[in-house]
Picture 1 (tube, rainbow, N blue to C red):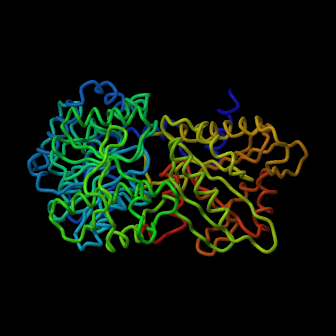
Picture 2: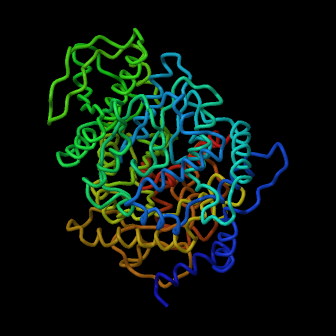
Picture 3: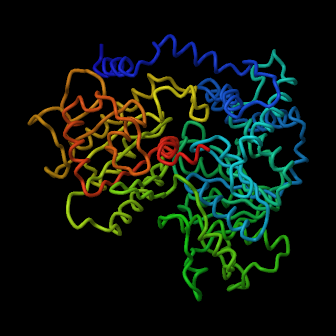
Length: 588
C-alpha cells in the first residue's frame, strides 16, 4: 500500500467518516437528477438547496461538454429547450436590460463595481454571479442583496416542478445541471421582480456558456484573460479569447481591458465577424486626470482595471438610456490603440465615485482584522489572479502596523480544485515567506449533511484528501529547492524530525518546511487561531490536533505571537468556508 493511501485511510478513520462504499452509495443516490422532490407547499430553504444539489454536474457531464465543444449550438439549443419548459421563450429575455460580462480574472469584481454604480443612480438592479461563498442564494441578488430564503424557496420550487413535470424520462438529460438551473431561475426572478437592469456574469465559458442564450444585451464586457479551464476552453490564450468573444452580439457595444497582443487580436477579429463595435478601456488614470483620485471599495492594484471596465459599461448603458448625469467627455472621439478604438475618456460623476467607493465583494482582496489575527481572503485560482493576490498581500503587509514587541507569524491556508496547476500556484506564493503552510479540503466540517449550501457531490472525500496531500508534496518539493537556508521557520521538537502534519497516525517522513494537512476547515482554523480570534470562538479542538510535534510546537508559536497574518487563497470555495465560520452573520 502506498504511503499516501495509508495516510488517507488513517485520516478517514480519524474523522469517523463512512467507508468508501457507503460514501459512494450516498453520493450516487443524491446525484440522480430524477430523485423525487417533496411536494408539500412552504418548503424550507435548506430542503430546496438539497434538492438543487441533486443537479450538480459530474464528471460524465463535463466529458459531454468537452465532446460538444465543436458544436456549441447543441448546448445553446438545449438551454433554449430548458427555458421553454420553464415557461419562457428567448424573446422574453429581450425585455431585460442585461450587462453581460465574461473573462478569466476579475469578471466578478467588475460585475460588483458595475452593479453598485448603477444602484447609486437609484436603479433596481439584478445581479447573477458564481460561485457562491456561503449560501447559494448569493448567486441571485436584487439591489445588491442575496434574495431572501423565502424568495429563493418560492422561485426554486416553482421552476423545479415545471421542469420535473415536462421532463422526458427517455432523455439522457431530463433536468438541467446545477448552473443551468440557477441561470434559468435568475431569468425568472429578474423578470418577475421587474429589475431595471441585470448584471450577469458568464460562467466558465463564453460562446458555449448557458447564459449566452441572451440575444440582446445592452453592452458586453471582457475582463482580463488568462489560462484556466483548459479542458473546456482550450490550452492557449488565443483559444480562450475566441471562447470569451463568443458573447459578442451584432450591433451591441463591447469593451475589453488591455490584453496581450495575441488574445486581443482574436477578440478584435471575433468582434468584426459578429459586427460588434469593440472598444479598449483607457486606464483609470486617464479618467482621474484633472479630478480627485478614485477610491475603490476593493483593495489591490488589479482592481483598478476592473473598475475602469465597470465605468465604461455603466457609462455606455446610461448614455443609451439618455441619462443626463453621465460625466463630461474629455475626448470628443475615440482614438485607435492597438488596432482597437479607445473608449471615450469622461469625467466620472459623483454617483460613479460613490458606487466605486461603496462596492463590496466578499472573498476578493478582503481583510478581517480580529485582535492579533489578520485574515486576508482572496479566491485567486489562476496564475494571473494569484500573481495579483501575492502583490496585494505583500503590499498589505508592507502597510501594516507592526507590533511594538513580540513576533509576527505568517500562515498560508490553501486549497485548489479541478484541473488547475496547484504546483504553479504554490510556486507563486513562495515570495510571501510563510512560516507555516496549511492545506485542507473545502469542507467546513467533516460532514456537511446539516448545511446544504456547502454540499458537493461532484467529488468524493478520498479525492479531496488525496489532493491536499498532493498540495503538501508540491510545497515540500518547492522548499527543498529553496537555496537559502534558514528562510523558513521550521519548529520541531526533534532535530531533523518530521515537519509535515497529517492529522492521523502514520509513519513519519521528513519535509524541509512546516506544512500541515487538516481534514476540514474548522480544524485548520482551530489550530491557526489558537482561540485568539475575539469573534470566532469554536469548541476546544480535538486532542489529536496537537499529536504531531510540529502541531504542538507551532501551537506554542501561534499562541505567543504578537501578530498572526493568515492568507486564505487558491479556491473561492475555501474562502467561502472560512467566511462561513469567521462571519456567522453571512449564514443568516
